[in-house]
Structure formats: C-alpha cells, structure tokens
Length: 111
Picture 1 (spheres, rainbow, N blue to C red):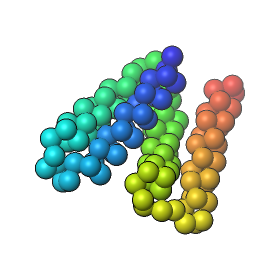
Picture 2 (picture 1 turned 90 degrees about the horizontal axis):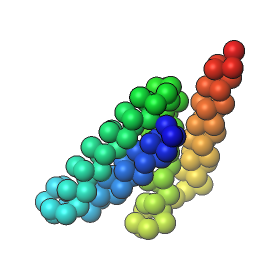
Picture 3 (picture 1 turned 60 degrees about the horizontal axis):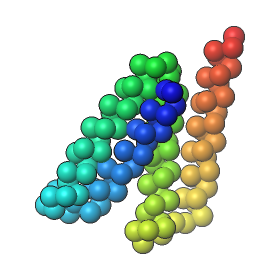
Picture 4 (picture 1 turned 45 degrees about the horizontal axis):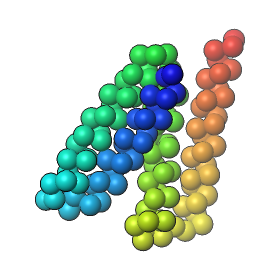
C-alpha cells in the first residue's frame, strides 16, 4: 500500500508541475489552483507512503527522479520542448539510479 501512495504522490507532483507551465506566473486561476492543490496532495501522499514503511531515501529518490523523468518526457512529447539524445540518456541514468536505490534498499532490509 505504501507504494500506491508514492505513485499517487508522483502523479500529483507531475500534474502540479505541468500546471506551472500553464499558470503564466500564477496569473491564470485554474492552472494556479492545480499547482497549489497538486503540490499539497503530493506532499501529503508522500508522507503517507513514509508513514506506511517506505524508507525515506528510497521514497524521496523515486519520487524526485520519477518526477524529473516524467516532466522531461511530457515536455518533449506534449509541450514542444524537444529532447536531445543526451537528455534521453540522462533519463535512462535516472531510471538506473532509481533501480539501484530500490534494489539497494531491498538488499539492506534482507541483511
């Protein structure tokens, strides 16, 4: 169940960050509300994942890395921001880092 809270936190954070793009510096009401509510929901859900046993380093690492990778992909696919091969390689490294955190966390718990 803790991982579901983390997935929700990632989704809320990504939604809020995309909302920043459309808020025009917080001059548009609806996207600005999406930003504030999205970030509040993201932190609440992250805290719930932590309260249910996710290790802080793993949870925060996965949350932050997934957010960065997803925002870069959304920007490239839907917001016309483009992506270079170096950026794509960076996303692959982020995914590798998240996997290393998770696998390392499982190994530490088994010991």
